[in-house]
Length: 113
Image (cartoon, rainbow, N blue to C red; front, side):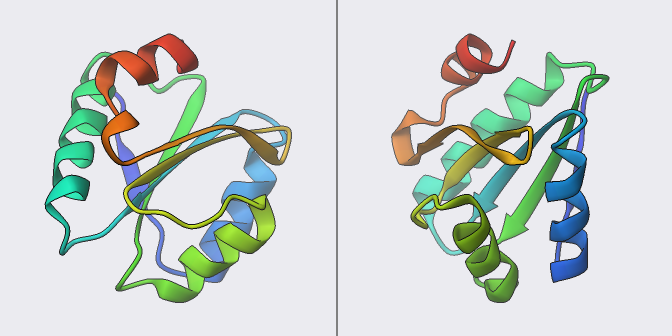
């Protein structure tokens, strides 16, 4: 089973962005006040139960609590902010993104495996 780390600082984000040049990085942007985001987080956790995490680093950003990090992700990736949102980074760039009800276990498996 794979797991994620919560990132709360700009330094942690920069490290992840740099790491995406060597291996895949998945960032889940989560709103702790949104029921749609709660559902998407559940789907993300279900996906992680099927993954080993050997080839990919997973991270979670709480968009309200860590607004500067969320804003920097938007700026660095060019992906317009939405939450819930999942962003797959490869080679330091956005490879794939999905938001809201498009974040499902099956969708993630189809794209990321």
